[in-house]
Image (tube, rainbow, N blue to C red):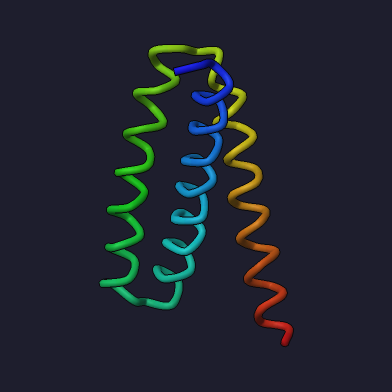
Length: 85
């Protein structure tokens, strides 16, 4: 697999993980145990892939950082826009 494909894959999965984290916190705050538990499980699945990817190649850490920013900021922006309607 080429480096650019790995970079984009790590970035994408980190975006997914951060979306999961954001919804996890929202569901914990709303006291929804089943929903929070599902988001928590998805966090572990995504994080396992991310960690095994950049532990093998530390040059992929910036992909994870970029994905983390995009995932969290994008989810908060989406949620805020959805609530303002």
